[in-house]
Image (cartoon, rainbow, N blue to C red; front, side, top):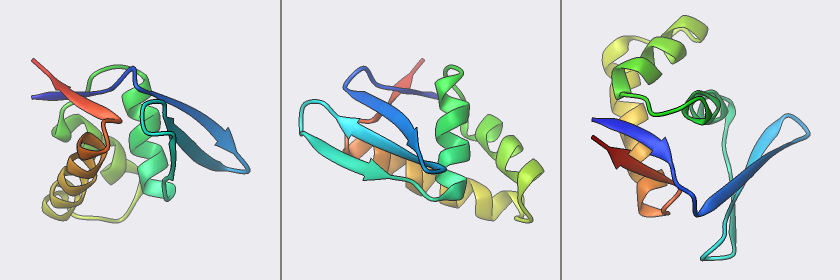
Length: 88
């Protein structure tokens, strides 16, 4: 399964952070450093959890299983806020 950014959002970098606006909700979201790395990778196109973890593991000292759990949790949160969606 691949994940991609939805068209319901717009994001911008502000003072080293990524700020995301959900158009429909009128709500703003911020991401931590790892979240920004994942978001930036998703901006390049649809990604699998494995592809996202490859990027995270190459930048941070984290084991693959922990990464997959953490990325899965983040993606579920982003999906529930309609900022990310799944694609086939």
